[in-house]
Length: 194
Image (cartoon, helix red, strand yellow):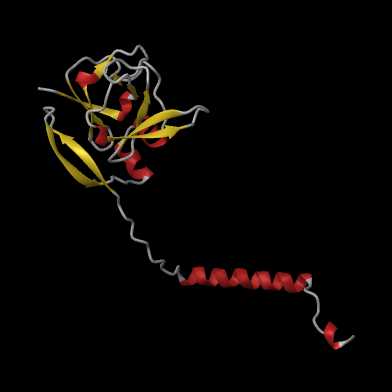
């Protein structure tokens, strides 16, 4: 054998011993306790919201930190249906929600964070089985984004403050906007005007 052939090929036994050593080292590190990992500071985005009193009076705009919670925290706060709609973008069955046929005067707030979203003055009978509005109470309080979840483009509507999925907006609504904000009742909380 020449000096160039002094290196022996990696044998199966060497490979297994090296692997076992690596596993044993990892196990020893775990046994010694996990080493702390420095958490990166979570930066909370601030959003501009127009606030409204329960009497429907517009108040000054405010900048608030976006509401961010874990799934477990949302599940503790919300019903199962409200969680699936607001946090997983599900849709309630038509004619099943408590607000599709409600005609009382008042405000519709976000079920997750109580941001004012719609006023009963803009609610109309759409014949769809969901509460429908021709505009939000303040454009700043909702966020619209493209949604391709069913294979065609729709516009999803969510709460600006907590990103709760509310429903979708369509272009087949009445005047003056021609829009139909088709919302899930379970994503809303109604406050009756006194």
